[in-house]
Amino acid sequence: MLSRLSIRNIVLIDALDLDFARGLGVLTGETGAGKSILLDALGLVLGNRADSGLVRGGEDRASVTASFDFAALPASVRAAIDDAGLEVEPGEPLILKRQLRVDGGSKAFLNDQPVGVALLREIAPALVEIHGQHDDRGLVNARGHRALLDRFAGGEVAGVEAAWKAWRAAQDALDNARAQVARAAEDQDLLLAHLAELAALAPEDGEEAQLASARADMQKGEKLADDLSALQHVWTGSDSAIARLRAASRRLDRIAGEHDLLAEALAALDRAVIEADEAEAALDRAADALAFEPAELDRVETRLFDLRAAGRKHGCQVDDLPARMAEMRAALDAIEGGSEHVAALEQAAQKAALAYRDKAGALHDLRRAAAKRLDAAVAAELAPLKLDAARFQTSVVRLPEERWGPSGMDAVEFLISTNPGADFAPLAKIASGGELSRFILALKVALAEEGGAATVIFDEIDRGVGGAVADAIGERLARLASGGQLLAVTHSPQVAARGDRHYMIAKSSQGTVTRTSVTPLTPADRKEEIARMLSGAEVTDEARAQADRLLERV
Image (cartoon, rainbow, N blue to C red; front, side, top):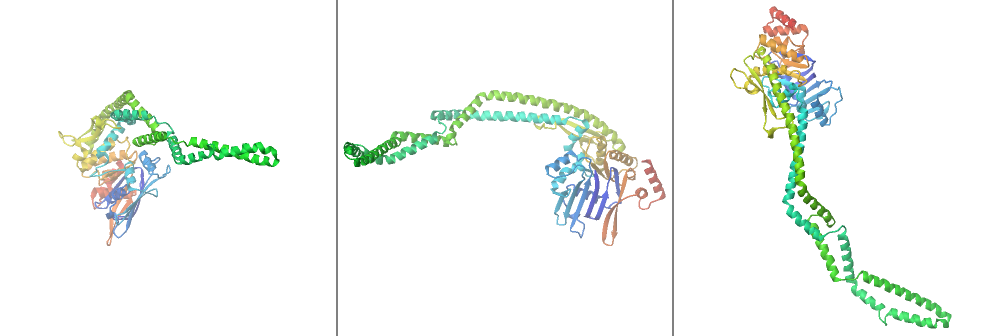
């Protein structure tokens, strides 16, 4: 509930701090005293558009701070605060602040943490509900009527929402599967052609690297072929260097026994022959390894070209071609097995749709029954509010399937007819300002146990009525306030007498300075204010006596 409102430099208010409590609080005062300023200030802190005209003349900035006390924050408020990454400790007051500069700029805060004005607007409906002469929100807005009826009916909306999500998920899965099969079917011929082409190519893992290495070796062999051929002449033929070296070794071997000095020379020559033999063997091995075959080089280069062309064609690396073939086979398999998969998904979607229809249909029946009860409850409130010729109707219309959703298959709207025989129409299109406020009051009474904002404000709901009707309005306001907090701006002494707390709004002038003040009234001051409301500018003893009777009666 709203526990405190602090205003600084708003229009005619220079400084004001008001404390509020549970129950019915009434605000009274002379016409033009500035009651609308309080509502404008509260609207500012609830996220209304910043208007620099609200800044008091001569000041460069203004501010409004509203404190709300909750045993536990409303779920919607807690969710919005958590989503914004803000911190509000359990049991801690919720303090909203709006600062306004004369140039039109503004800042917003929640518990001293800077926030966007959009956050204030988001949480405002759970904090304060204002009904005035030209109200176009709250109960008048048809977008909220379905939720109000559901709370009144006690319907299981969560089950319908869960069934809707399950249906949509099943339908999305079916639509995606159908699209995949359709795309695959369109590409089937192309897939078959590509797969046949790759199958004929038969790429292997690591093949590109092996071919590239072999090609490099053969290209090196091609360059070294002449040099290797020339080197082979050194080792081949009877007149080659190695043949002469072997002949010298044999001849020296025959005469080495003739003298010890020849043995050392023979050993050295034998080592030379051995090294030459090893060199010849190494040269033969190199020649074999680097053997250049033009036909083989052409084959390797052609294979590399074909593999790399296939990689470019299919947008992948050569080594990924086997995996791409597997993807193509899987796509073709999906086409072949797609009908069975789609059939299974169709069955699941049909089952989910039936479950949703069952739950939404049950909620529809519950809404229809609750609508009759609500109509009767509102009708019982109309005559005492001088709306005895009016009729109220809760319209529950089943929507076409394309407009079904997580809240069911119904459109719900509160309709009225203010004259006998007149057609029913939306609240805001038929009711005058006073009628509209009284219709809203009747609805609020009928829906009193069905939740809503923590604080409800009625702005001059009693305009244009008096006597028994004003008394009926006051009785219903008090009844509504018994379960929470309700504030009423009123000109009616019958309504004012019902208040648990009474605040008087007054305007005073000192020279060229005009100020608006709000004062909580003592019991004696309260009697005097109600007497003023009864008699006018001059308060008579008869008015005071009547004020006593009003206060004693409640």
